[in-house]
Length: 377
Ligand SMILES: *Cc1c(COP(=O)(O)O)cnc(C)c1O
Image 1: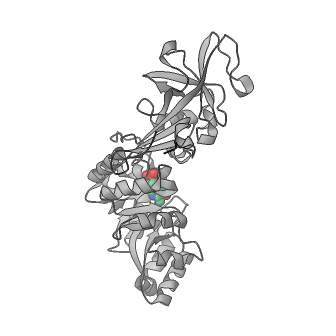
Image 2: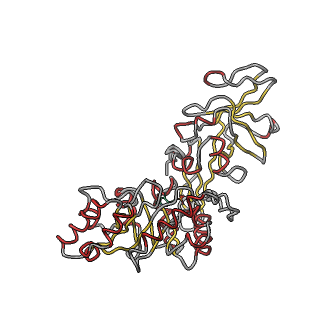
Image 3: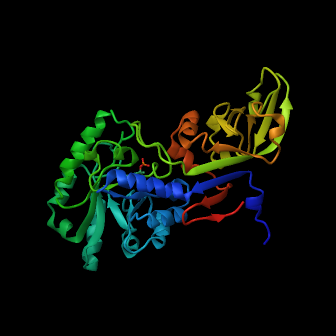
């Protein structure tokens, strides 16, 4: 077989640990039992790859999945067993009702107009259709207002033609366990959910899972915690890291005091330094805000990023390593055991979600463990 240049020539490589993903799901599921632990797999499973993620989570026993877009649902649906439920969080886009129904995808109804259109399709086709109904419990993002929830609850035709599988809402401050908004949203959610007795309830995302038990209801919807992010400020069990990102040294040099590095020459050391150029840049999703901030790691040593992050490369100071211990072609860790996605995000002034969902397409990807061992070096 001819070697694949995208793999052999890659200067960045991403390793996704499917055993860690399965372990994180098991941990969350045990924490919330007897509530069901679903999985949020929007945005290509937070950038980790929808197919291996679904294969792993299905094998782990997960049967409820959430994506954001109908197109994502169409990609996910054939990868799921018949007994799995697949929900579209962003709602029912006008004109997509028949597509959604024929594919067996469950829309999250966020507005009265969406509810009306879904009900109309059900009546036309003469069979009730499944849906979730989202309440706005205080975030002002998606979902019906309390008075709208009441009118739907009191509408016998809606109740007859739309078979509600779930009522749900979303927390604005779940990662901040002390935020008073959490309790207020839980109260608002409970009041609206009470209008639909017997319908399963869902409020918690990853952060909500580690709030008190009243936030767990019947089903929880973790995303980031599955993928190794720290879900909350509470002393939650730290989740197992799922992602390792390595960058290759494409050039090494020693510079003298005062020599500039990178665009704008924004780094000028006060003494001689050993500088390595890595073949990863902002076009690979490595944030440009990490210019002169953050670090790579190798052999337990922190190697600071120096100068500006370029499109395809960036420089690190490797002076902390013995000169003979590294060479062109060697790899350093950008995300890994020494530095998980949370500190990378903090250095970049963002959140772990953005780091994961920005991961570039140029990396050589490897899936290890579980059911996905494949890929290559
Ligand atoms: C993205 C999303 C989730 C998952 O959130 P995490 O913080 O990643 O756990 C859950 N519910 C809704 C409605 C979402 O949009």
